Amino acid sequence: MRNVQRATLSIALTVATVFGVTAAVAASVHSVVRAVVPAADWTTYHHDALRTGDGSITGTFKSLKARLNWHLPTSSPSQKNDQIYGSPLVVGDTAFVTTLENRVYAISTVTGRTIWERGLGERYTQPGGVCGDIKPNTGIVSTPVIDEGRGELFVVAAVGTGPGGTNPVHRLFGLSLANGRLLFDRGVDPPGQQIIYLLQRPGLAIASGRVIIGFGGNGGDCGSYHGWVVSVPETGSAPIDRYEVASKPGQGKGAVWMGGGAPTVDKAGNIYVADGNGNATSSSDAYDFSDAVLKLTPTMHLIDWFAPTTWYSDNLGDLDLGTGVPQLLPDGLLLQVGKTQTGYVLNPSHLGHIDASVRTFTICSGLGDGVGGDALVGSLVVVPCDGGLDAVRVTATSPYGTTVWTQTAVTGSGTGPPVYAAGTVWAIAGSNSGSTLYGLNPNDGTIRLQFAYGATQNHFPTPAVGDNMVLVASNTQLLGFGPN
Image 1 (cartoon, rainbow, N blue to C red):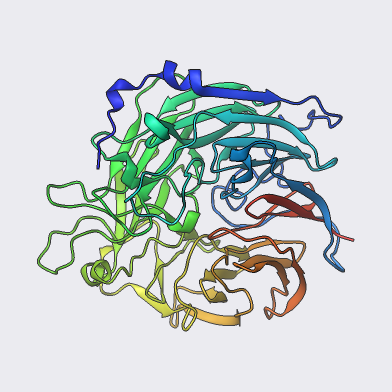
Image 2: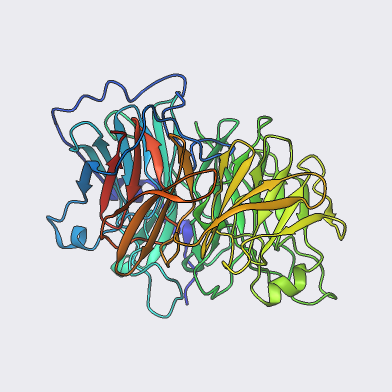
């Protein structure tokens, strides 16, 4: 195992490896850049900073037929092996997808043609002997974020350096929405880390003019790493701020990954993340801020936190709280679901630290873990469990959470978090044999619509909503479904 020598890397090296292709196509991109984000756009994971998953579609669905059907290019050998992992984003009539080969595509939702393509340096090829379930290339894994006022898409890519591209460097790039031109490029790796053991899995967020980036470990938790939350100013070279989980001597892990979901940002700009298991596994160990919900300022000062009293046994059994996204609810509560089939009902103004009296209820019972972001349907919270969906009503008084319905059809290794639009809950279920988009009745969870599209689906896939369509990305394909 080797330490990445960050000191030998320079911006000039990365810029030299960045290439871009701008295609002149019939589709217009005049609707891409706007000063105010319309509700119909989808500029971040689960639509907005509160991660509501609530999209805007006018019209009703009688059936599902793909109106948009775009495929990754396969003209080169590397393109034949490329994959999409993050959620699509949509601004106006343009969709954006990213790939493990460090490519970004802008696609017309009207014509289905590529507007522009941008490559962001050499792909990172994971060296042999390193754990992980995203192989062999691990370039852009997370969902980007768009600052529509700036007309800029921010994306983190693991750029491969050295022989065979086996030394990764994580860089934050800013691209013009209109033409893919490179506007921003900055290294964001935390100091003193073995970067081959870090994975930038959670979606990006924006808070107070800063891009918020989470880091965790590879699948299997091998090597020595710490969870991190990194805050990078959108402009200039102002200092990068960081929060490190399990930062004291002898401590480690505490991944920030949240099933691919993004940090939640409240209206005051405070940031909420959940993190995973640390290596403190005994009640006699010092608490290390793992297995927790953390509340941070945009400059990465810890304001408040919550951890269950079982944090050390959760760590020991890999039952961490950090698989789900902290969900702020309209009534002022916060719901956190992890691997223990327990819903924690928290007060975001006073998270309570390690609190035996915290309000809890059973969720995902028999359906495994809660993974990724929820969908809000009024007062109903639709939670993604790895064996289906649970729709619950959360209250400040006992029993704190009541299950309204459960839908087990949305299951499989490629099952993902739900979203809501056109009076329907949308979710993807996938396996090695193919994937299915489901449209569910939000009142009882019954299946209204379904569309099997045959493509293998990556872990934790979640739909997007934009240009009056539901959009889903498989490994190599982007599909859009509109009302009819």
